[in-house]
Amino acid sequence: MSCDSLIGVYDSGVGGLSVLRAIRDALPYESLLYVADSAHVPYGDKTQDFVLQRAYAMADYFVSRQAKAMVVACNTATAAAIAPLRARHPDLIIIGVEPAIKPAAHLTHSGVVGVFATTGTLASPKFATLVQREAPEVRIVLRPCPEWVALVEQGRLSGPDVDAAVRAPVEELRAAGADVLVLGCTHFPFLRDAIQAAAGPGVPLLETGAPVARWLKHQLLQRDLLRNGDRSHGDRSHGEPPSATCTLETTGYAPAVAALAERLWAPGVEVAETPARWR
Ligand code: DGL
Image 1 (cartoon, rainbow, N blue to C red):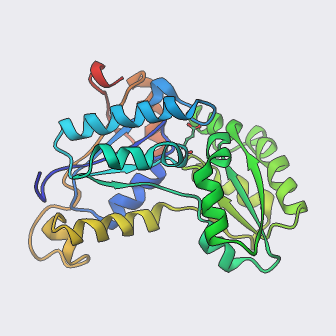
Image 2: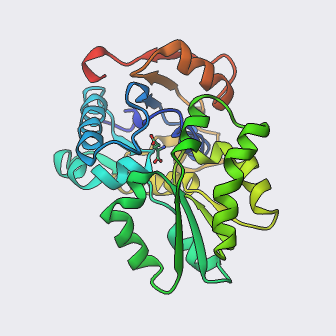
């Protein structure tokens, strides 16, 4: 493993592309490999053990590709698997994502914070501990939204049916007094416009892509594993090409994921199938 090794990023499906975008923006010189575990989406209603086994498979795959770091771009998988994953791969930098409870607790004026996430995330002991630690004085109102994951996986991001699917959960938490809303699932930033419209213009919608990317950069720097170009962000005088490579793979049906990634990532993007052993 060296500075030039890749960074593996995965999610149950395409949601983690919201995190991948923040990573690419923060670290344009790194080689990135994203795996959409689409053969097993959604994770939100699976058992903790199932999500853990998939995390092991993804980590083993990234290690087989000599990755220097791995980002679990999924709140559900982070809640279910991050500690055992770190125990299994102590030499690998492993970064997870968690709902933005701490910044939400600072921002709220009403003292009520709304959280949208998967059933798995909201039911996890890790989420309960996070709330207890970061927001003991705040009332947290929760709404699992598996139907929002399905919308994004179907590429339905706007239109009357999306507005209708988003409206009731948002109104429910707003009616409970929430003045800050946490998007605690990496799929949900792709529905941001619809959620914002339902919540009202001034209501903060918090996601975690950018802080996760900053934390990843910090960890790479600490271990001297950051590629040169990213050390002095903004200074491109050293001549390395930005965004060395960014490869997308899926454990599911590649043409279907490519059609989605066209809209969620970049036009013309190619998606390959992850080798069968890891699917
Ligand atoms: N995007 C994932 C998360 O952040 C998982 C969604 C799902 O597969 O249910 O929780």
